[in-house]
Picture 1 (cartoon, rainbow, N blue to C red):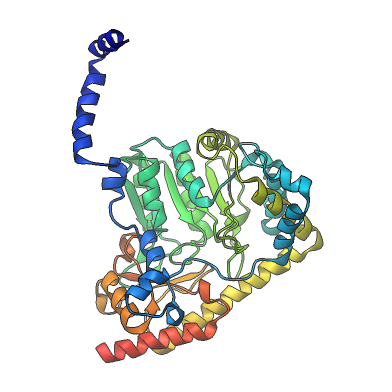
Picture 2 (cartoon, one colour):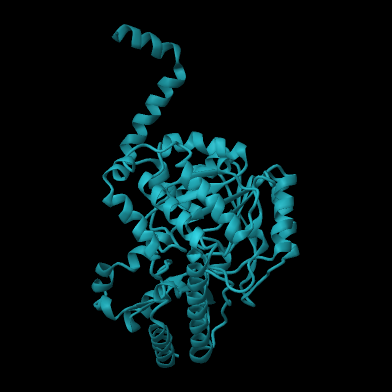
Length: 445
């Protein structure tokens, strides 16, 4: 066996070279280059999560119970009782509970996918969607990573509307090593205005496509700005990506949390638009941040590719969450209670956003973006100071947590993200938190 191995190594010089270089690298590092170099240091998402931990707050000499957080990128409304009952039914029935422990199909539970079709039709008039165009996954976060693996090769560029969700950037590094990240501007950092239909941005997108852009991703509504680009812009972007044989990816994690008139892109079908991919999650609208279930809607060719990736990454989407979601959707769509629930949740966050905007205007007078939906607003850092240091000083001195804009795209490098999501039932804390900031700035000048 040893002689055979030696002869094999002699014939394959590339293997010998790899083994030699691998030995040298092992002396220098302990983990992969991806982890030690590309993902080195705290990402914006890690920063957000760690800054909100009670242990970190205590280290600053603060009482976590007295901290007012505008940092959390999460909702806080109560999940519908019908959803809890759906889980309870499964847990109380020995046969159903046993079934929830079985593997689901790689593409996901068929009943859940069918009910999602009914949901999309009833809520958003998405009539042409079929269950075959839906693939279930762990979350929209996982599915975003996997979509990149399906439609791109490592090294091919990925584009984002700037600002954008901070977690996307590390996802590209993980999924597509060596792929450049290109930004299409939408926020004017000096005027602090969001361009709903930026013609110049579309020209930049065209130029990127000529250079090989494969995917252009936009959260709708956006995180961190809570803006919704105009229908004209989104249609033009889809046409540009289609002509370039690329994909427009709309992340609808906040889809149900729109204010005002429902965006028409909500009814766009990947069955009819083969270069459109949409991602979805139960996290925000069903207040199920910890009950992880997401799904992708796409043309057959993309779904088939995602199924191949799902086999290696998940093997089987969660059966319990899928069964409960299917039961919940079937019941609440039939009795009409789901529409009432979603409308109540939308109004709750719209009122909460209004409290945040009013407080910012009356107490601080900061430039800010008026949310079209979602959970956030964005402001420039006062006096253009470095946002990370400002946020840390503010937290230590006032017990108010904001999130630095660094990591949400170039235009947010001197900005702040404020979330009103966790305080949807505590409007008085929003007012108090903004007042604390006002008093601090009055003292420090």
